[in-house]
Image (cartoon, rainbow, N blue to C red; front, side, top):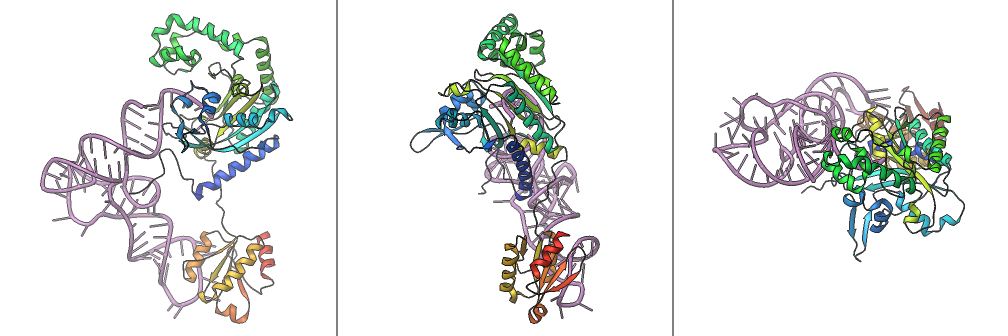
Length: 421
RNA sequence: GUGGGUGUAGCUCAGUUGGAUAGAGCACCAGAUUGUGGCUCUGGGGGCCGUGGGUUCGAGCCCCAUCAUCCACCCCA
């Protein structure tokens, strides 16, 4: 019997980890330049955190969570997203009582029991940011700018930023009402899914891809017209701030968030041409979240980027190249009597910060050269009878084919000197 | 959860109306006068043909199931 990785999970092998590390490095630099600090929360949490923090009615909670009982019969869930854990930690450690806003970022695996597809896995990785303690629309703009800056730095400039405001609970309630009034007369002509959506969350009907549903609800009210004065003002400032920062966006009336603690700004970034799972990142404001989890009123905003989707986009657009690390120096033994000698040199040059390796499979001298070449070695130190007898090392420059005879003292300096050129 | 496509060597794939020891390229290992890489040439190892049933004298080819994967729906990162 052969055991394979579970459905929807993947091994990220060394050929790919170089790409991951490169992306992670670029993202981290940007996050820190925007004054975000890393937080690390558990990979599993009490199930109720997500029930309250993501929402009972969401697909995530109702059918996509990896929930299990531990040996003490506690119901735990592998985190399907990162925001709820951050909010929980903010409350648990009374962070809200300190200097505000707090700007946190996190990175790591998330888990959703979903049907795997290109760009969608059961274990996937997100980088996310959360800023708690400010309701400033300029913070909304900054957050969006951060996301856009990251994409640009990765070379993903062909994105579409969708932006909307879902208002506050008050104005959304009135919008909901006007939407119900609009759809109600035609609800029987909607597709079965939409009939259900209409009952549970009428806003979701706007998302439906079925053409007939679109036609049935044509002329539907848009949320923008229902926003209260403050929400309208908030959204206007966000838009202006983005425009002033030369960030292009598409105002998208159909971008909605179903739950009450999602408020005001909502955004998603899509990269066309990478398949159905084109959203590489998304986020929004959630002024009601901390309260919903039992904390004080504490506004917040954040976003998350999907690592696998960023990789998919980079690969699809041919931007994903990244060099796997090799070695600087390879030690080739022409006689295996000199193993201990080789080890000493390895120790020495590695301590000097030089990447080095040797053969451990008993290859012939010729094969060792071939192996050195494949590892990308710029230099090869040859050790044979002649070298040992006469007390020197042969240093071969693989590019120029020049060979130098060096003594033990000269070795490290010479290597560094050649490497510097 | 629904619909459709695909599973043959580490990778990319051939495999003729079901017919004998299942092939190629790349990769890997070795050799081409024995202490020297990239190119070339020669040779070699490596496949329960995803898995389990079934039909048949005979299955990589046909049927069923299952698993995995891909595409779309759905959802979102």
